[in-house]
Length: 354
Image (cartoon, rainbow, N blue to C red; front, side, top):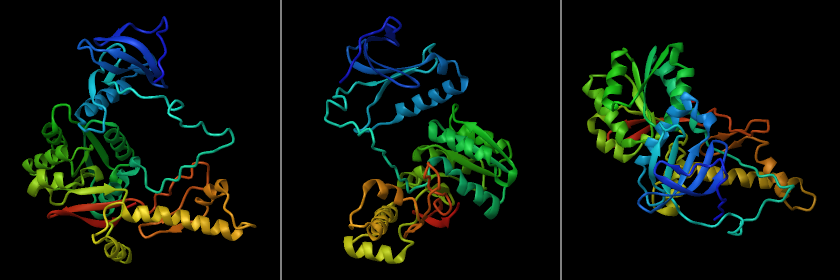
């Protein structure tokens, strides 16, 4: 663990925490080692003044702090306190001591080394695209409402759909500050023809589905793949029927030869992401094969292989992988996003929707 003693500009206390040392600093804030009034140590992140002065940033920080408080997992450091309304907004988590990366033996990359990241799934910010197509072509609507829950994913999804409204209509956004039911009621009151839940909680999505049923809303409704769980189906009950889910993964049973081979090898149906994992390995294998054909001594240069990954379209079992011909190497979105619909006790694939 690396700590730095206070500088004269550092505060002595934040939100009931006595600040003992700096743990680090980044673009948005400074992280301190603090001791709470209970005596427990905490990592306290304090937002920089230039961000604290931005209303939009404060609103987003407020939502993210609330979302982080709800996470309960043995693998996630718990939030112990936060004050998004303070002059210097802050968030504290339990302190978990550990070595710095260099002390842990993680080497620095060589000066001439370039890391290459090859992402073979569509980014989360594009998840509005399947709804845009569905609500434009399949179930055309002019008025779409978004029930926006807390968290960055919800904010990004709402923004993306708002910037690209189905049928060039209007998109209204309804926050859940007063509860899911109140947000749904406000959406229906605006004569929404489709209502989309923007959030990551299957349980709260189920509340949304039940609230829509109570309001006699019968139009298209849904959320992202985060809600595509047995927990949602159980909590929503009969109101789950017809619920749409946009996802970055294909139906694992769709490539029949792959599904049959997987079942023969493992004695079970392929799970989500299995075709995508298979394609990621296939992409690398194809690039290695091309490199070996052109190498003078049959060896593969790692640097050249990294660039070879992006050169040609790879036709996988899940989808075609085509990458942008620029420095970003981003996956081209065509065919990389999918739509599902709740039917009975499962989610049926409606196919690619991008």
